[in-house]
Image (cartoon, rainbow, N blue to C red):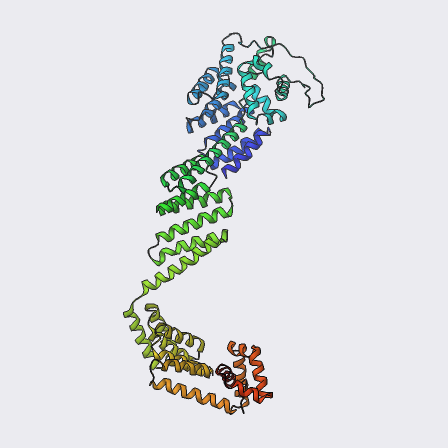
Length: 573
């Protein structure tokens, strides 16, 4: 990634590894050839190695890509200074000041360039400072950047401001000598060690020629020093932009709460322009678009947020939030069952990032809505009747699996027809699939409680499952709706025969054992046997005939006793 290579280049430059910095900036430029900052930084690195021709080429590219960026002209002026193109340097700094009239580095560079231009024309230097020109030009910033102690000071705005003030007017130095950082900076610029309260080293002053006696070659060498890359200034600008972006976000949040959506959009957009590394600005703007019903814009912002979050390796919860918001917008846009598919996919992806209960609920709701729409889209009573008739034909031909397929298709076309559930229950009964048949019969009764065929199907299945008491109850419930229904009456008769057979003890040992095992699996039987009152009743029937006689007068107790008898758990002789 270009940002990663740029960060490595900045770190190398700060540590004085200018060749490595050039290599990293070059790699970044290959990835982002239109990024003016990368050319600017590489220009500074080239200048630090006195490769001013390369520095000039990068500076020109910077200005061409970003003509309204003052720092590009600062790079251009420094490169011309290194090549002794003093007039061109002056022109570059002046053009930069047209873009940013209050830029202090440009003002300092212009003063140094004009001074160098005057000397090149034979004019005497204007400096009357006893320290010579140690504060002039870019040499001061280069030395302070190279020293590990003063390099840290350059990250402190108040120190930078003091040094800029001294550079403008060296006579202001006396006003800042009480600041130990200025004293240390002065020592670095004079190439001497100055004792401070935090240092025990003595002051060692080497021989130094007066400015007037300095050789012209050395003066030119000082003039050719490049402007430092000013990483602290870039960091400060970044922090300021981020802080301003947060303020815009807060203003957008306030507008959103007031339902002033247009203002909220405007604020969030400004925040995005100031800081593109905080995807919450995008997700917040997407939330506003969602409230405004601008679902396409919401989805676009969510996609951008996810893409940017991947690049920045942002918190997975932020990715999940963007995907959830996208899914919500897609649900709002859905007009048919297929439209729910991308929404469901977005919710599922969000849950893989962060399992949020709200997202899970949205997913379940979307899947339910999709299913309901599919049923509505597939609903066709006419085709359902055709499939039911096909199923009936297959049933008559004893093609039960084929009949089940036709009945199932009929229910897809019309899930509210109790006849189809009844017919499919009959198929399941023939196939021995009793649980499925019982479920269909119960659904049939649920859809139409007066449809006696449903009771007949249910009772028959319960009879085959040897649940004679339950089957009898089902048949009797059906007779409430049609008292003379012969099929239901026959069902009751068969159930009575089986119950009486059990009561008489006419069951074979195998039948009794099977019935008892089946009865013990019945939750109702289990509850009766674990009831302390019923346990005492059973003991009384065995040991206390008088008490047992009293129990027979209780209908509820006798009903439970009858269930135990029918299940083969208790035998009456």
